[in-house]
Image 1 (cartoon, rainbow, N blue to C red):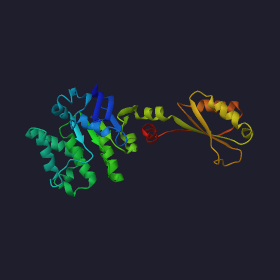
Image 2: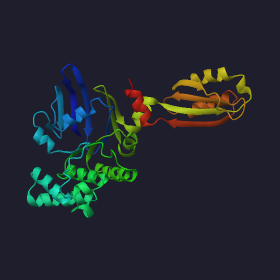
Image 3: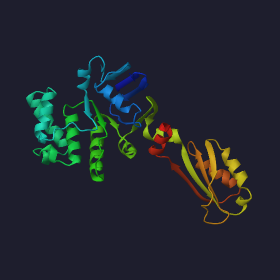
Image 4: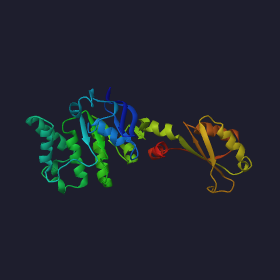
Length: 316
């Protein structure tokens, strides 16, 4: 079931189109990484979803509620942590969360239970009476997440939740996001691509106001950049037959390019190849090498990472 539906979403600022017709759906229980370079339209999309700005055209529906027609009701289904965490530094943690509970319109008993639940889930029990301004940035982020989940929303939108944190704090916040994602729909916007691979099961990449990739993280990585195979052959007859070997390998289904790597051979006459292609190439590469009478020293397939895919899809 789709809990977020975006269709033909456009946003124009004069002659500039921040969004040029964005379409995507997010289903209940998904943890989605929403990626894009600066100026790609990522923040604009999130601001429209959360009701901070309106779209020029198209529709955005959250939990069955049209954000453009009824933004207040739509916000009731959303929890939002912007990049600058919306906490008041002079308030104590408990005091601040009680304030958020009142703003959300929760009844006294319901609000008290919600505050306790959020404090527990975000690991803030020992910090409940501490002034927020004296907390470490990691704990401030925990308070920000606590306010976002306080009213038990269907969908959680997190914008750069680990920005500026140290490695230990990053691991703690990632673990918290995975825990929340087991029960909620999470949209995670970040520039740390390893974070998406560590926490998200699906990725959306936006560039120049359009979605350029959408799917499970592993599939997007493979489909966008293919795989790289390293093939090393023993010296001997391969010295005289390099051109033929490269030609034969180039004809294998799925192979896109073959490059002779020079200057890397440990033994004179050794042939090292880099093979870029799609799918599982190793069995056919093995059979081709055997057919040509070559001795294989190494045959290794390497998956491209999300950072390489991102650069490929968003570079100018």
